[in-house]
Each structure stands twice: as C-alpha cells, then as structure tokens.
Image (cartoon, rainbow, N blue to C red; front, side):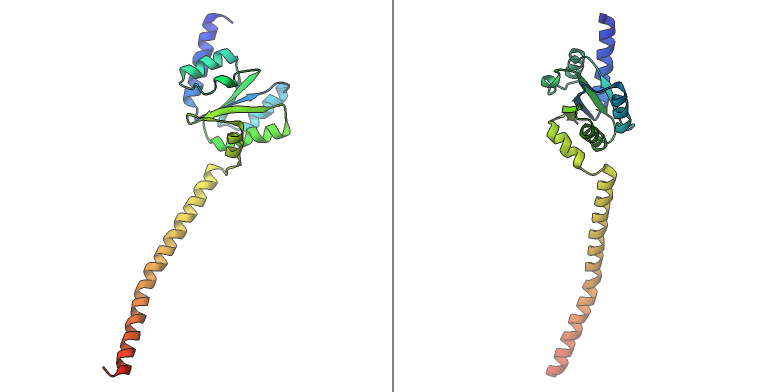
Amino acid sequence: MAKAEKSVAIAELKSEFEGSSAAVLTEYRGLTVAQLKQLRVSLGGNAKFAVAKNTLTKIAANSAGINSLDDLFQGPTAIAFVKGDVVEAAKGLRDFAKANPLLVIKGGVVDGKSMTPDEITKLADLESREVLLAKLAGALKAKQSQAAATFAALPTTMARLAEALRAKREEAGE
C-alpha cells in the first residue's frame, strides 16, 4: 500500500471513529465473505462493519483520541462503527456470534468509555432505546396519576373530617 493510500485510509478510519457513538472490535478469522455480508445485514443501517489493517486502525483510533483499544489490535480485526442505537448493534453482533462462533467480540469503546466483551454482551441484553423510553413514559404517567389521585383525595378527606367533627360536637351538645 502506497503512503498516499495509507494516509487516505487513516483519515477515513479517523472520521469513522469520530463520527461514531461506538466502535466494537471483532475477530473474523474463518468467516466467509457470505457470512460477513450476512453480518453486515444483521447489523442494520445504524452500523458499518469494516475490515482494516491493524496498524492503520490503531493510528486512526489514537489520532481520534481513543487509546484504550491498543491491546485489541492483534490478529485479523474488523470494526463495527455504530452511528445509531448501540444496543441494537450489540444485539446484532451477539446474535451473529452465537450462530457463528468464529466471530469473536474483542471489546470496544462506547461514548469514549472502553468496554470489555462481557460489557458489550450485557449492553446487548438491554432493551432497545424505544422500549426503555416507553417504559419511562409509562412510569412517569403512573406517578402523575398517583399524584392526581392523592390531590383529589385531600378535599374529600377534609370534608369527611369536618363532618365527623361536626357530628361529634353535635353529639356532645355544643
């Protein structure tokens, strides 16, 4: 590879690292081209799966400010650059790795934080962003309903207390 081509490749990889919310490194040794194509499809539109030279990728990651991945650039390495929902991409990688044990998740970085393969698997176990937001909205609505019921009960309780006090005074002859 000529020096100019390397510079272009490094610049491309650097822009991918900078424009992604997450990058997951995998080892793909033994996977066929058809299987890699299937993996790209399973990741969906929010992730880009790329195979690149370790040295160039390491230089690009370091120039993008990501130094925590240096130990992972050994053997054949491919990177999933995630630009959308990180959980969805992690699920796609995890599920593909279960079906094809030759794909090994090495680790990655999510929003600047280094992640181990176990942490990426735990991330994949989370529900999607939309489901979590729906649950949050439901919880907030339930709390609002509880607050409204509490506020509505206050006047009724006051009226009952006033009536009980009136009845007690009437009984006492006041």
